[in-house]
Length: 499
Image (tube, rainbow, N blue to C red):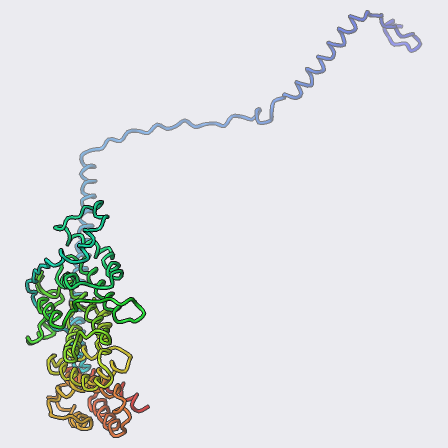
């Protein structure tokens, strides 16, 4: 038997006993071997790393092409051909556009001609003409204002009492500067307070302040003087205010003289309304001065003081009422319409009850005889806008007198006036329809504002016939001037008459 063969009965050899250091060394060696095997397994190569690399074909190098003169010439000819084709297209487009523009211009010209023709025909059929502008030249060139001196002002009791007062030792007022001192008191309102305290207005002081109001070029002084006189006169008229003694009062002649210096034209023939401008050639002396505002206010206050002060007579008040009414015809005074209406109302209330009827007719006749018989008469009538009884009566009377003047007949009866209006043939081509339009408006104001005529059935029946003649006698196709104005106005008034 081979000794090296395995024999189960043979005892197993026992390992030799090793010391502890050797044993530790072997354990460490075995440990690191195992760690190395694990790391080797972890960092094994990936599958794609064993794939064959992708074969890459070598980049073919571009060969440089040589450009000859023939190639350059061919390219130039191609570009030139393209440019010629573009120019040809642009020329064709321009010609087409010009042809279209010429066609559009011709079409527009024919359309414009057609529109003008239709407009002319419509104007001929409609007959709507613009009303002429109202307005006359009431004020012409101003005159040189009088330079009045008032030496009595320096010797007035009011100024002397102030000079002799002990307070003058502080002010040291000189008598030569007394007028300037009084002007300062007037502007500040102290002069009016001194008059209230003294209870009187000296003659020299009153005339001096009145002259400043009418002729001074200092607007501040003019306004202060006007307020002074209005306050003094109103205080005199009211019983509950302190009584003030006034040594001098303005007169109608003083106011009329001032109006003449302002350039008022009462007797000159009035300028046609179509020739009136808002500004007269830019002249500094044309038209009324700013003092006209104070003049109007003063006249209104003077008319309110008849119960206590006798300033105007009845004929003078009638003339003032005519002047105020004529002011409404000057376009330069449009900004003063409010104070003009207030002044007119004061002038209307100046007359007593028993005086008013005759005075109203006189003023109406004066307006109809001295003012132009055109569109301006409607302006005057419409300027009397008060809702009180006297305003309505004056408006009706003025309309009647203007209507009589328009008809140029010696008639004074209402039925005769309407008979003349009815006899007018509005279908006649020679009929003045503008004149008929003014008569229609005047008759309206006359009949509607006169209660006595308004209640007369015979007059109302004749009025209805006249309106029917104007509304039905003028057709819608009437091409005469103002035909449409008369027809529409009469149709409107006829509806109210029917109701």
